[in-house]
Length: 327
Image (cartoon, rainbow, N blue to C red; front, side, top):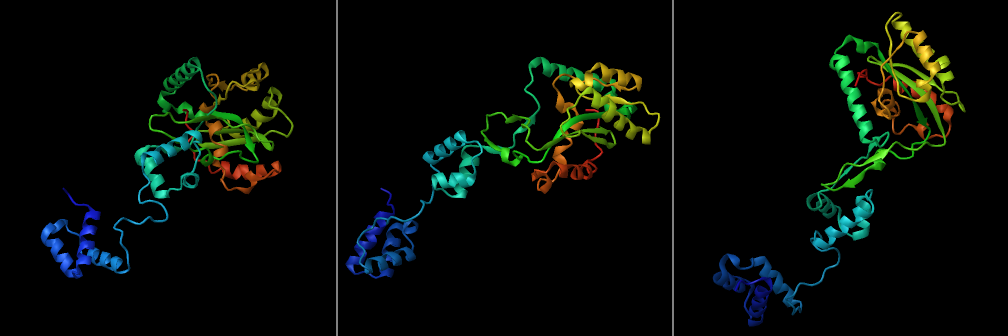
């Protein structure tokens, strides 16, 4: 039979009662059990305990957490917390289960194999037919512009309208959720509109930002505004640098972009249309390049004063890298 700690403590207690010294007790244990015998410091400590009147050889109960809480019960409890709230934090798990940060980290990553990632923004939940239309359009553009190497890409200007919010309802970091190993990455449909906001139209070419046109408050985007204010200003900016350059316009299928008035305006100005698949707003570089280029701690973006937004807009747009390609 292999002796455990309590067996050795019983032998030490017996030797203590026999009147053996600490050294004599240690020598006897060492001669009988060699390397399995307890150390001299262990013998000494137990002699001290017995001298103080202790008679029990059992471990005394200790206050605080046990040495290890990474047990099936705790692992399952953490799993349930994550399933109930995918945004749950380390602090909340610690408060709920009374376990250390180290143990939480071990449970999350070694036992549950979860990781916390941001939700990916998507403009719409597309049908299979719409997804196919996007793929077909992209293939067509790649072929037409020779994988983006054609000189014609320098004639493409992409633009779209976008809301600039005075208050961001939820940051990217706030949208992070725990994901188990066999689960798909989370997505979320583009945010709802806040009460304080301004609509702007941004246009880019392959060399960067071309023009930004703000919509006057309480006005809606329509063909009249698009053809009499927005596009003339954009075309004017392009012509300042390239007076006779061919212009290929890339915008989405919004009603103001596809109306008879807009088509007539583009035909009159000899501006070509690039085309665009339905419900594919995130194929537009301009759609994806505006609001993410503001500092997250910018006080103006937390303000309710919409008039303060415009002064912040233009300097940040000028910082956007000149990396706007065809696709």
